[in-house]
Length: 108
Image: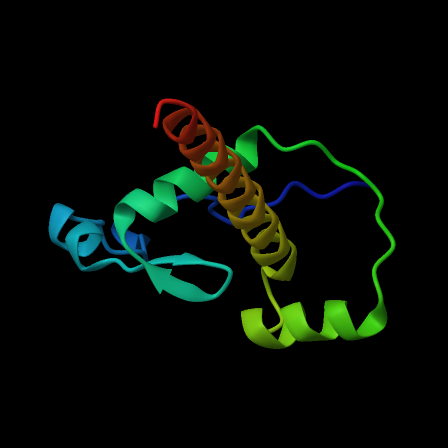
């Protein structure tokens, strides 16, 4: 026969978690790939994370070990993504500079 439980499931007087205040949020630190960053960089990382596409990629073991070590074991995939984005943006900047220089040289 099933017994009915008499254990209380909720009691407002026994709430063991303190209320979170604005001061608590103001003291918070933001981390991306295990590194403390400012709020703006953290927001960019969060927004980017929401738009990511899942893929399978095969990398050399030393590359994975490098990023895991650099990220402290957690968030290494985010660090790889940030590194690829930086390389992508750098390449675009180089291409733009080359294009501008070519145009300027034509006018000389």
